Image (cartoon, rainbow, N blue to C red; front, top):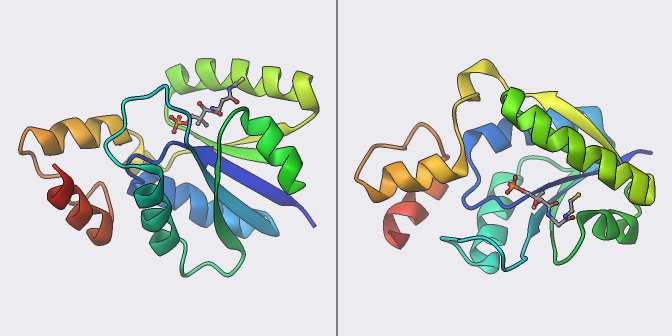
Amino acid sequence: MVKAVFPGTFDPPTVGHLDIITRAAAAFDELIVATGVNQSKNRLFGPQERIEMLTELVEPFPNVRIGSFEGLVVDYCRAEGAGVMVKGLRSAADYDYELQMAQLNRRMTGVDTFFLPTAPEHGFISSSWVKEIARLGGDVSTFVTPAVHARLLNTL
Ligand code: PNS
């Protein structure tokens, strides 16, 4: 029984995140999609709203649930009894950043990281760009689910 954590900020969750959730849910027995609530980043949505959006997103997957964490993601993984994390990789830049984080996390606690290559049709999508494009009046309706899109339009 392999329990995995897919951590992220998810501000907001995108169709790229949904693709990783779909594939990780098929690969692992149990998946916890966990949103980080550390204060360090400039967020559009508060923790509760991100949890609500994620809860709607994972509704079709019986082996997926939502969590949230403050502090180190590896401490959260250990508290949940999850031995592995899942991360999506869009580019070499993601890889360079994530590789170092994965090595640090494994050295600190033994929690290992599994990387999934993003589907090519989602490789250019990021929460940050979605927020910027939406703020400036661009159409982001194909980058997020309809439910997230509605919340974005209400929040901006
Ligand atoms: O969606 P993001 O912004 O790429 O998610 C980043 C996140 C939240 C997964 C990452 O920043 C994280 O794990 N933060 C928790 C703090 C932590 O554990 N830092 C040490 C990493 S070696």
